[in-house]
Length: 313
Image 1 (cartoon, helix red, strand yellow):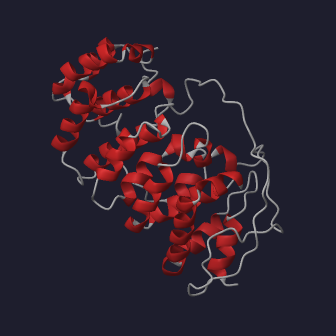
Image 2 (tube, rainbow, N blue to C red):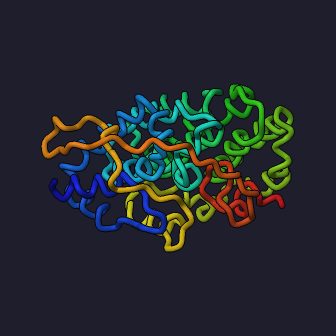
């Protein structure tokens, strides 16, 4: 088993409070050999998400997605979208902290230039609303990266806010309103006002007058949009501060001696290695904590609640 194979296996199992910096660095340094394994794993998961969910592969999929984004691997775009299309409120925990931290950035980073799959993801009523919000936010990242014309996103936001968005709730129109604030689409204030009439519960998160105060012509919120400005560039730097990788993190460990061969059948790839079957275990259910002002905002923006949808409070 060579270094890449060893790193791949080590990252396949989770140890609470342990951050495998060296293993990630090996895969970054040996990108050419790592990418086929990462893509094959992502493809396998996208074709059978429930198996990955049942085997609690949350942290491994986070590593895989971050690395592929780090490598600007656009071949990951379609299987990522396919994976996300299978996640709803019953299994969205599979993405772990990625859902709240930076899913929108990952989507934008691997986008192959065709935003149609992102729009379809954002508008799909069967998908978890936080994933849909991340899809919307990824479009703002593409604008900030000069990969999407602002006028295109502005017109799209207008159509969504004025009724094209088929949705009952408040998260998604608030996300669209936040994008308008981030990119200073001040001429969409009338559309935002109509959205507050269509989805009155939006006011539970942020009052209309606060939005109107933020949307001042010619004033660009460069600080507020910082999270959605950048694409993924540093896997290690992005992940090493996560609470789950800090000493003392209270998460259940996996056993390195357990089977790992449910992982993708990549033995035919150059330098691949045989794996045994991963331990099947009961899904660990955690109670959802009450959102605090310093917690990541539930809308999927990645900002703290008090600086995003909680600004009205």
